[in-house]
Length: 277
Image 1 (cartoon, rainbow, N blue to C red):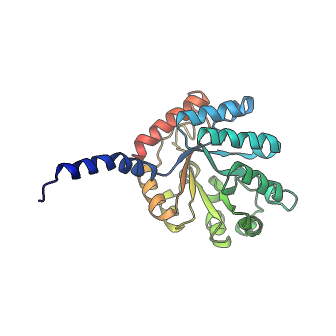
Image 2 (cartoon, helix red, strand yellow):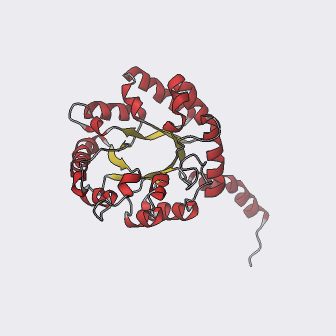
Image 3 (cartoon, rainbow, N blue to C red):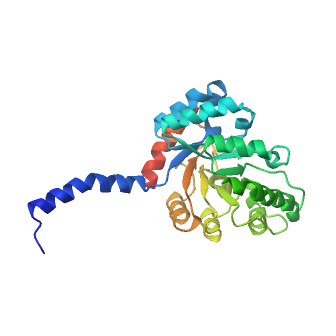
């Protein structure tokens, strides 16, 4: 082994902090779906987002009411995000927000917020497995209109998408009948509650799971359990999402718990960081 002289040692020592910083910055951002703090958000949107950022969340996802805010309010929110160093990578939207009458406003608001992904939060399909075809058509049409502006379209699952209808799961139908560029945002809790395997689903859709809602579930407490207290196999999920799924950022989501909304968000982030590490 060649000995390290003093000059080499000093050079390596000087580089070490930058190497450690680079390693830390390579980790995927973790954010909060703001539905988790919906009551606080109604009372004080800016104060709530500030509190979330100060907890250490690196990004947020606005849900449907963002659409009703004025252009000035959304510009002010973007300034606050920039001041906090927090990103908005995606928003949750009603399917109607992709209609011809509303899609331009959807585009403009998402660009104002700095969003990359316009995610449809849910849909009400017609009966039968083929009843999802109008949903797929709407997603494809919106993708054609929004992609030139640098925005991608996506769909967020709930339990029904993983519950078979006549032997077919709607999630599979949507994946098959939408463009590969349409993101399949995976809600872990509802996937697990439906009895599906989130790891197998991620591996079956390489590159399309750009983000996911890290929400846990248990048979006795449902979605009220905090992140890490339920039955979701988080270590396996993380590995599949980052190696195969194409994941770009994580989003914690909580539908309620034994703690206040902001305390719940704080506890979930702490557990996520220790679990993901």
